[in-house]
Length: 303
Image (cartoon, rainbow, N blue to C red):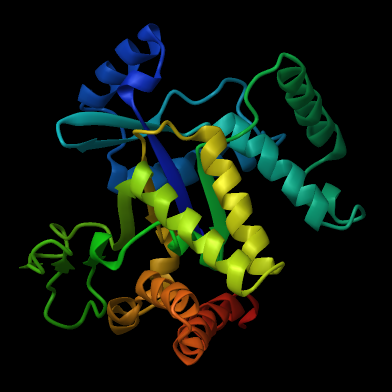
């Protein structure tokens, strides 16, 4: 079972890397052995579990990962490195910030955590980059993550919701609305994601921020949107791609709930409502999307 985590990923164009890195990533993209995108989350998760069940646990790998998510669009190659070591260090800091000091050693011995922290400090002191190209969110998708996308950029792939039913796998893509069927062995991974060009994403996010500044003012929504814009400005090449992947969250929802999930369209409608003075529309759309995600997030505490 994959973790109930959503991902926001930046895919850099191959031209954004140094010449040695370009050679490596081009060869990597052509390799038959690399994890394909639909299986990469599972591969990341399995690698992390192997480290954490070791004796003693290994909270961060000794070397940075040489794996990546790979996309091709318009004849161009795009790469999103896993950055497992850096993400593990940052995750360890988040863990300690959220866990009472008396409980933390139950999960990770102090000596192991201290050694990982020293390694991270050495990395930071060398001036290495501290921003990852992947953001994660457990049990929910932060609302600002929907703003960079349009509804037509959605890709929804549904696995078999009921193994005792007809054994068919159904897939719907936004471009043609086509349906693909096959046996469970042929079925693609259950997925809901959005992908768009960075220039379009930044334009949409900038518009959302401007509308919030003008019509809402200082608020948690504005701060979160500005924080997302700051992250993109710090990590993304102008010609990059950005991907919102529901990841393991798709396993919390049945097929009908996934089909009905139009969070991107609802956030866009809320922004348009604010911009055009249609306050009732803005409030209705905002309440609709927040109610959906509060219900999903509440499952974290379900028995």
